[in-house]
Structures are given as structure tokens and as C-alpha cells.
Length: 249
Image (tube, rainbow, N blue to C red; front, side, top):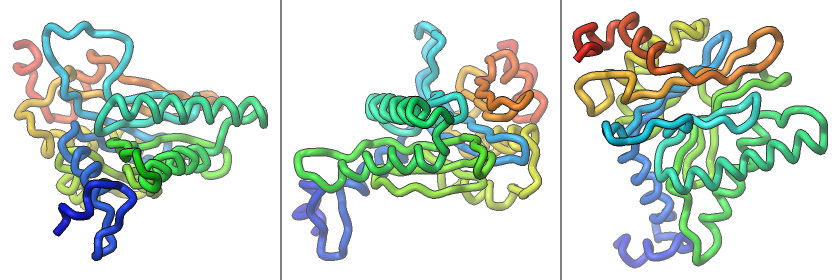
């Protein structure tokens, strides 16, 4: 039945479904997973890197984590070329707001404006939805630390802990069990690594397969910090999800 209604994003099926949007969400299910956790003193983002070849030239750029503005960052799951377009759009919108009002753009307003763009690609013919989901982490003076998740349909929602990408259902149920409201940033890092170690397809967790970023306030300023591979290796050992022997091999 679906075959008659899945050729265009603008056609509803008799059950009221937009199949192309659902297929875009399926594409995200095959991507490397990412987890975001809101803590009392920051937001933690952890992502699984899919490209880990020894021949790959390591650069300053990352595969999963991106800084949008000084107070907002995001983790990505899905088609990276689609994500790059949306990230650049978000950066421009954030800078325009700062230029116009001389203050950082509120996090939810930035997320909503980006989701409006995504929604437009589900409503007009000749376009396909962006095959990418985001976890947005940020801080503003109105609501403090915030974590939002958005999908290809243009929907977004605020979360205390969320997972996107491969095995996100299993990760979400683990987060639901272990998350507590008064969790600190260090505990959130431990929880994210523990959940990712149990839901990742890979057998062993190493710093080459992960990216970890944090948004926190230090000396009255919002900081975005990406964890170095050396620090990440120490965190993995400390949280007990990898063995010392695995690091030396």
C-alpha cells in the first residue's frame, strides 16, 4: 500500500502518514549513535564515530560534535552532508541575532528557527527531507542549561537525557532507568559512556571510536569543550567500560 504514496514528501497516505519523512528517520537509525545528558552544572554530549580507519588523516574537525555559537553546540546523527548545511544555517542565524540585539540568541529560539527550515523541506514538492537528527546543548540567561532533540520532520522537544542514531531505543530505556535529576557533570559523563558501551555495535570502547563534548559555565562565561583522546582514554578507564590492556594494544 505504501508504494503508491511514498514517491513524494507532499502526499499523505490514507492512514495520514508521510512515508518519505519516516524513511528519513530510518536513515538516522543506521548512523552512529549520540547521547545527550542534562546535569546540574552542564550538558554532556557523547557520540560514536563510524569512520575509524588508520589511514584517515586526523584533523581539528570532528565527526559528531559541532559548535554553533559560544553558548550552543550540537551532536549529529545521520547524513553528514545534510548536517553541514543545517549547521551553517544555524550559525548564520545565531550571528544575525547577536548582531541585531547585542546578546546571544536564546537556545530554544535557535532550535525552533532551524526546525522551521527542516519542516519546509517536508511540505514543498521537489525537495527531500534532511536525513539528520540533532541533539542541541546550550545555556541562556532565561532557562539555564538546556538539551533539545530534533528530527527530520521539524519536530523538536526538550529532554533531560536523550539518544539518537543506532540502538536509540535501548539507550533511551537505559537512560530512563539510571538518570536522576540532581546528576552532576562528571556523573553524566560516566552514565553516557556506560550507556554507549552497552548499546554500541562495537565490542570494545576506545577513545578513537568516541567523541565527548561538554557545555558548562566557568568564571561566568559559557564554555564549549571537546575532550581530547588522552583525557577520553582516562575517563573510559575510570568509568570501567574499557580495560587497561585494550589501551596498550
